[in-house]
Length: 114
Image 1 (cartoon, rainbow, N blue to C red):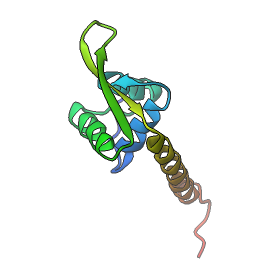
Image 2 (image 1 turned 90 degrees about the vertical axis):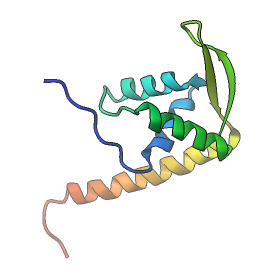
Image 3 (image 1 turned 30 degrees about the vertical axis):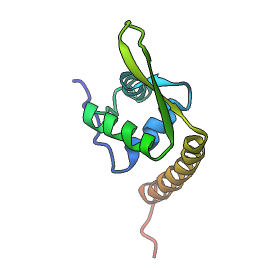
């Protein structure tokens, strides 16, 4: 039986997009494919969330964009991290790691401690 994608927690879209673009400029569909492939299908961005996130990050100055031609010879908008976006990615990664560590401390607890 195929595994269904997990629901994204609030606030994860931005960090996922920033991380996907940390490797190279990409168009929106490539960002979504990278996230899906990297998580073996566990995380999947729907088009609305993806493009709202890309536009939000661009408005914040964390992404820049320019039009180009995709691998299938179609016009596509390519997004790239700005210097501010790279700084924000470092901040977001640190916060997410601290959050995940705290959650795992609870999940891995062997006994009820006060």
